[in-house]
Every structure is written in C-alpha cells, then in structure tokens.
Amino acid sequence: MKFIWHGQEIEVEAEEGHTFLDIALIAKISPPYSCTEGHCGTCEAILDNGERVRTCQTIPRSDFHVIDYDKAQRN
Image 1 (spheres, rainbow, N blue to C red):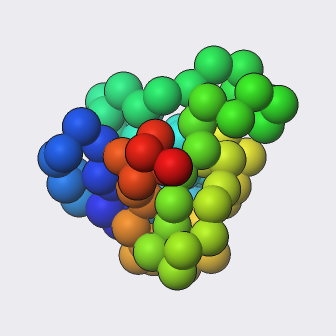
Image 2 (tube, helix red, strand yellow):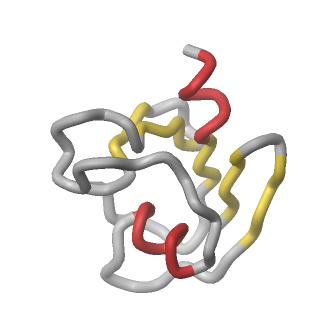
C-alpha cells in the first residue's frame, strides 16, 4: 500500500481489518483527520482508481492501493 502525503510516497504493509487511516497512523504517517467517524471529511483521499474516500471509514479491498491525500487537498 502506498500513501502520498506532503509530496512523499510512503509504502507500508496493509493491516488486515484496519481502515486506511488506521494503517497510516500505525505507520506514523500523520495524515489529516479529525472526527474519525466519517462526518467531517478531513481525512478524504483519492484512491488509485480515482474514487474519493474518507479514509477513517474505508477498509482496503485488496493488498495494494495508492492513497493520495495531496490530490484530495488540491481539489
């Protein structure tokens, strides 16, 4: 799994059963988030397929995804 945040690309192992946000926090990436309940939208990111997701609520469907916080922040 690859996270893009602040211009850096960080590859980490997917943690089964965890949300994208959980995985990022375990990897000490410090992505944007606030409520962790899907209400505020602060944690929004763009997946490799172009889908916009709230990472605090989304669990990966496969072993590899690209999660782009930078692209979501620009839109």
